[in-house]
Amino acid sequence: MALRPIARAMFRARKLILTAMCMGLVACGQSDEGAIDIALIGSPETTLTSSMRLSPPAQHVRAATQSGLVALNPQGETVPALAERWIVTDDGRSFIFRLREGSWPDGSEMTAASARDALMEAIEGLRGTSLGLDLEPVEEVRAMAGRVIELRLSTPEPYLLQMLAQPELALRQPGGETGPMTLQREEDALTLTFKPPLERGLPESEDWEENVRDIRLHVEPAAEAIAMFDSGAVQTVIGGTLADLVLVETGPLSSGTLRLDSTFGLFGLQVRAQDGLLSNTSVREGLAMAIDRPALMARYNIGGWVPTTRPVSPGLPGDPGLIRERWQDEPVADLREEAAARITAWRQQFDDGDLSQPVLVTIALPEGPGWDLFFDDLAGQLATIGMRLERADDARQADFLLVDRVARYPAPRWFLNQFNCELDRGLCEEEVDALIEEAMAETNPVARARMLARAEAELTLANVFIPFGAPLRWSLVRGGLDTFVANPYAFHPLPELAEIPR
Image (cartoon, rainbow, N blue to C red):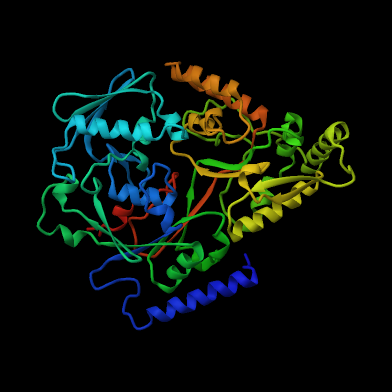
């Protein structure tokens, strides 16, 4: 993959500057104290926030400094955090957690009542978000005797633990951080430091500091983060997307450093236009059938990426296999001919403009060289069916919104909730929302899976979302950093990266 001339020049300049800065050091990127340097792709303004709407870098920082009842480990599995253990009742409608012994940052006792209040505050703060919709089965949070709290559900939710492990569900308290690390900020420097074992719910150990390192955290745009990695100034870069993959060397020499997460999630176009050409379901279906998904991703040279026409990622656990891919084995030329005919038919009936010119549609797309290339390829494909694609100046007025979002948990409800009408993200189907509510009231898991498949089928036929495949997420990892593990959620806990394997 070739960089554009300007981007290539800027990249090389930054790389040379950083390399020069590191010359003369025995181990560039490592201090005498043995700290590890980690770069998160993003901006500091959206990373250090008290908001409940967290960017990916902010999620990593929140998870390192604030703990919930449970947390995610490097493999993406749920592990104890402030709760040392839990049980789930046979009917799946009660989760009972026992808190670990300890105190809050201000020195007050960690009680069931205080943990309940913090959790209820976090849940309340997520109202109006898709994660808030996911948590709707939580009917009551009760403080029981001693250090025990219970979450009562209106209906079984097998992925509740995965939801509670999200950084937004951290139990925050006055006086400091509830998580395993503290954050110090001095001018532009950010340092994460481990708390002593007892404050992390671990047994006391005299030599504990020999097994952990501080993290010097760098939150940078992609080009700067990649240049820092190439020069040795950081040992890992986290948070890469399709926007910046073109800045990374993807040849044989990168095979040991470039790590791809095989994710579940949404990557496609959300239709936002309420009227005009795209208000027509048949035209939207024509658009969906005209996209050559493998060709859209061909230039990025991503091994293992699987295209899909489904709004729910194929291959999820418990998928009943009722929904199939659309237009399999049909030539793309024939599909585009049909799509163009539908657009022409609509325009002949409703369009007063010059029918010899392509119809204009706009898209809201993030910034980044990878998205620039993606836009060019998508625009070229839409031109074959009589559409002229332009980037929108105002995302709120765009006909399409690019969706590039990793799933929080691997279940159809996460995907379907992303298009709930309450979120007001674009075109939606109230019938689909009603089907999801009906499915969640069903306690039989087989019957529930079938009802959710029906909801997916209805969403698919509505064509309010044009799926392409799974989101792309990548990291750069220096050799020897064995605690880094690629996982389906593209979430890489910072504390584990700073642990020294014994």
